[in-house]
Image (tube, rainbow, N blue to C red; front, side, top):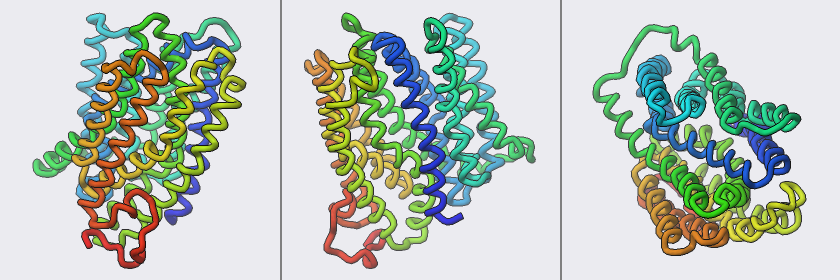
Length: 412
């Protein structure tokens, strides 16, 4: 299956998953208001954060090692099975000791399973299967939300935990034959390389998710905290929707760029993707501005009118948010997770410093801190791309370069 066909399949199938998550947020917002929406986003953000800690960066390390041929799918599956045995004991012990509710612990464990086994599906199955497996949690979340809104009060923890449980079951089933194969392990040096790559790869999603969860917690610590978290979830939903096409294509682009970089082939594929991403983000900016101004309250309800101003702020930072994610994917594919990790740490540090300096007092201040943080990580990630590949800064950030594309070679 050619890359263009794989990307088209990803856009079609995973677009349905992104749309399902968006519709679920609309249903919860309109039916229950900002308060329950705040509980929903806080619950999901905590599950996402804990699952990122639990996977230790292994999903990114697996994709990198499986793409380079240094790891087999059976070896990765058995590493996952061993790790999950320990995680199940930890989750049960935490729930038994009362540190977390049993339902929340189950949701965190299910989200971890879904994250760990998705790379194996990508390596062992056709790309449409991977895309279908990826959207299962969001589709189940939409179905559960629709059924709940027909009744009474929503149990947001049950909705989120149940959706991830369905995703975990489907993902493991898709890799089932690999788990049944001969027990095998990579060499000691191979395990060390996976652990080192996974460590640096884990920092980036942890920093990104910690920023989301931390912002919700800071808002939630104030008066009417759940309502403020629910209001700020709309700007977050808006800006993250800009990365939906990239999230759909990222695993496929990762494999292509990693192969190109390993073979020292032309960098034209990366430069073309950067230009398209820049064009997409610049085109999306006025759309998001108009949507925030005229359609936000009509879609989510009149109670969300205070979210219009922070939505406008983050709409203007669409370019920085999207391009920094694309450059991060490229750095991971080029075998430089440390550079992306450092830029992500810088983003989180800038955001939290600005929040604690006084910007946390308003939704607009929170949005401005995010915009500044995205600008910082864009500059640092672009500098990392230039350092690793030798291409120009203009090519790295998606702007036109006078150099011919056929002359762009990694390291030149």
